[in-house]
Length: 393
Length: 122
Image (cartoon, rainbow over all chains, first blue to last red; front, side, top):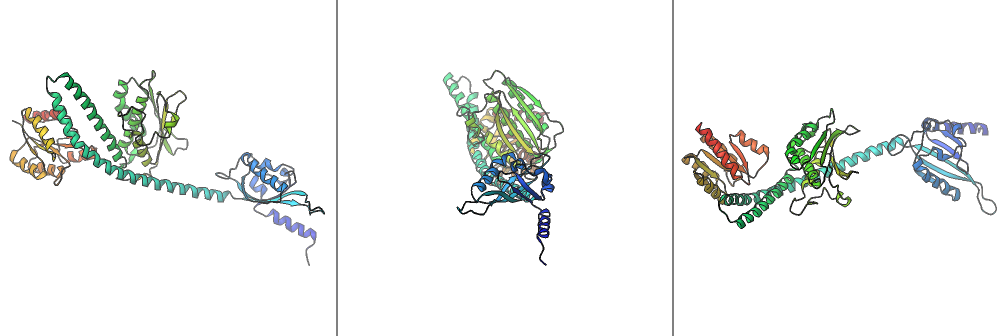
């Protein structure tokens, strides 16, 4: 015997109520006329709480415009909405953004229309739709994307490391080839300088030569730091101890330039896997840049702060100065090789490039911000676990 | 008179040091390769050897090893373009007396010689 209408209605209700999706209908204005399925389980609202509410009250504020556009489109046309991803808000008022957190839904909705009258016009009765919970799917997708990103970063890091190693071999070779003749010239020069009763003009020429020789040696040293950047000897290190050591090393240099150093050490920092020598080189370089930036300033304060990042996965070192700051146009180029704002010949412009690469090889990050007061702050973030640090040598 | 041997494959580097140290009153010889250096250590019996590390053929490390085997008392001062502390440490482990990087600071070199010779006297 075929079921009667009452039985059919009961069956359909059971079907709707047992659905894992949210099933709903809206009137032409967009207010709920029916809500069933897993709405209570997923959103925390009983069906009767939602009835007569406008659908946008459930939608994340950032997605409301998008949802309203789709709704209007169905009202004015006959298009259906398929696979629209939006974020819903739960009863507790918590946002559930689909890209990261809890509840995301994929919406399939269709317009309901009266049968066409003799003119062919159809009246819009409202909307019916199904919202499927895709939170888990989004989470998996997110995790997959994150893994892919990490893989890409690791690959890029290895490529960079390999490129640096190749550049390192080249520059080490060049440095060696240049240093031997420089050594001979330098020793000859030192002998010449020791000679007594040299005419004044010769003394002046020798001073110029000495400066130029020092310059060549400094360029070679810069190149050598670059050539060594890829070689890492990593061991767990106390960041505070490294900073303390660097400040001690830089003290005479800072004193000479009337720069006051302030340090604020974060307590209980975890050991970080680092190449101590390379990292000291990085911090000395940043400090030397900071000192240069403060050369013409009245107030010369160098502040170094160490701390945990809020996530606790990194240790952060902030080196701030009261210098001239960095032009916005220079911000993007500051870590490029051969970029320098110093006078031509004063520096090769490899210092921050080398620093950037060393930090990169540690799996860390370095960036610079201009302070409101005018100075600059260099931020270095180093991961407390070193699984991603390539042990190249 | 204190005897000093200068070992460097760059003849001009040898000449400057020879000139400098001779003027200071030392007896100085030079060698431009490892085997010659070892032979001169045996014949000349220097108190101090300035030894370049990177040389074609027999390198400075091998020469250092051989010199210390022949005469552990000789003060071998390494002279190199290599600045890595681990490389320097290796030569100290093999018995090097000091490690000087190029470009050489003649003032420092002179001091090292004097300190070593004072050591020998006391």
